[in-house]
Length: 377
Ligand SMILES: *Cc1c(COP(=O)(O)O)cnc(C)c1O
Image 1 (tube, rainbow, N blue to C red):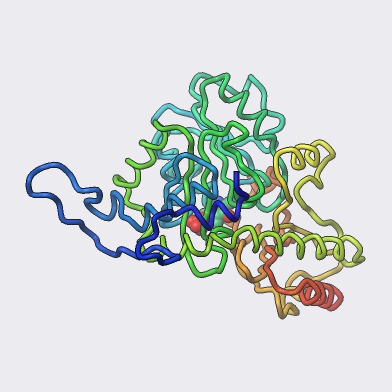
Image 2: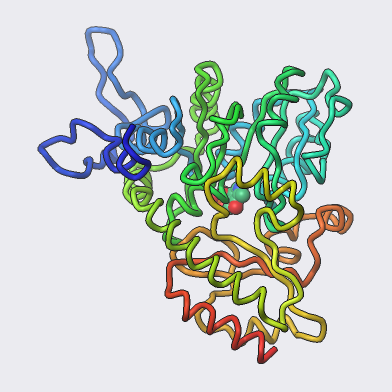
């Protein structure tokens, strides 16, 4: 089988007129045969040629039978969590992305669905699975603590109890980790992050190999309408072709920065996937082909976080990740601001923890920026 980037670049066949990129179809509606029967496309919310092209490309990225393009990562998550019905229970890792947490704490209760947060999913046992548990929803590595959960073990356990497993794979993307191959039923991703990759596009993806689940997701697109527009579908299918290239560079930069920070006296600890324990390091190396390009760190006692942030010239102080530009944020007050104080404690997100999303700039420039700001803080 051809390699990842070859598959993604050549996912679309029969490009019209010999053009190396597909055309964009902005039409909201499609003329139907008057003699009865249905045209291939009917109305843009249901499906349209450009979104189909994006979804074909995204399925090549995932290595999945089905992929669906949504307007945002949260619309993708919503289509999956929306499968739960009154009386159901979902087991969710903690921490999870702030938006996923909001779904669990604000939206699901309105629907009569309960969420059980489990801070370390590697400790999941038979006892967690009551008859009402219908889904396990997890992120690995976690945001922003970079804890690693064993996808295959969790999937085996969940499937033995008839529960679906959903992995939010935004942090590693299928370039580095393919949860469907490890047994997960569905993956969701914020394509706003690595797949889009340029800080200028909101999008989400749901992927699965299961035909029934795929039909449910397709139906949710029609019902909820949070679909990706043709223009953004086109931009996403183009941007994602460089995913492997970008991530290679982002990972290379990350390993050099992490090494520099680990050796810096102004840094008290650096968190990367697998740094929590030997067990997690083993799981990470078995289920993913790389650590990705997000890490977290804390400044040593006596350093002033705000002063550090003010000194940065290359890193931008902003939420989000996965773009070509390097960003840094304070999860406790920013991305995870929706957390209750208790859950933030349970998730082990200290106020001063800094999350770094490494871009594709020169590694020397990034290291110089961080070390100069740490020294000045
Ligand atoms: C950003 C993000 C989301 C939400 O995606 P949007 O495109 O912002 O709606 C979901 N999960 C993770 C892990 C994220 O980082």
